[in-house]
Length: 442
Image 1: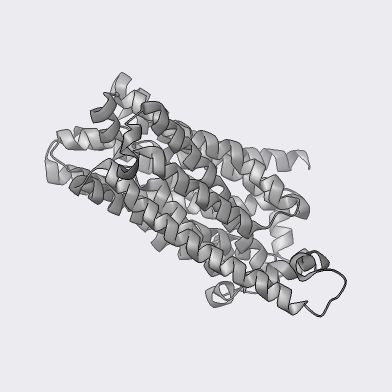
Image 2 (image 1 turned 135 degrees about the vertical axis):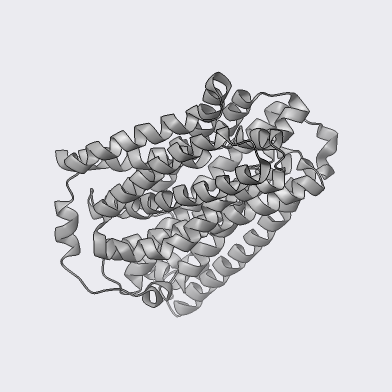
């Protein structure tokens, strides 16, 4: 890897870090601040979820704009929008009127989400272009890990700064540093190699071609449910921790660090496993099973009420959920990336950007559903009952993924059942990984 590629990766990871930081910055204190102004937890969930639904709407545009503007330019534009959005959100703390506070919160989060969508859609293809083909999984895992670090620290930094200096300071700090970093990257980021490699095939790829590739829809399906689980307690965990254990906003921020910490640690590990031949679909299934288990003990669910409510068990469960999310998110991303190659699409900046945009769409659509429904269930029932509801959704998701995966394995066995070299149970070893990926994606 050349020096300029290392510098590029530094800027890519920095943008991903602040994108994650921006996403989780308000989680530990916004619901509390909103309640003081008369805004319910359900409405707070809509504010948190606004970023996800906006990303869903912007994602297809980002994927296509990469072809016109270039990934580097779109990354810079997105970073500036995200930075300004955070700075503007800081001024909302001075608004006292309930309805105006809620409306401005939603509008500013929508504006910020446009920038966050552009950052995530461009960073994955840019990261892949900085390394050799066999190391793409690791490069994207590193970029994703920095997003996880930002998500992990965002809640903690937000809660601590809120306790120290009030509502506005967390947003001023995050937005100001991101803006300064972006201005530096304008001069230092070198994307010459990306332009040259993309120029080898300038054919404009359509969304129909991308969506027809193997593995795209099953990847999106798993992402939506995992994204739903990730944000299920985004607006309800802070009130639950405050009421049940008496935690402050800063302490709640430390609890919100748990999933980000495990997500950051295990994302590169899953990337290494996949690069060494572990099937992306298996990683997705394992990740979703881990998420399901974590929700059993997070409250815990009413059926396990004999365990009682323990802060350490809640924190441990949230951390375990981050582990499962790492496997699901990265497994789905790499499954979808490989699917475009198996579908015959060119290996260009545009195609990688469109796939990462679809990946982001799945995550954010699920996150919006989770933040909205999770906070509504909490308002009408309890935190423990809301986690049981999410367990049911995850069980449905795992059932579908397992059914699809088993049917694909059967298809592989039947396809090669005339091969007498070894028993059918182990016959998958006689075919290439590319052939297995193609069949498993169909």
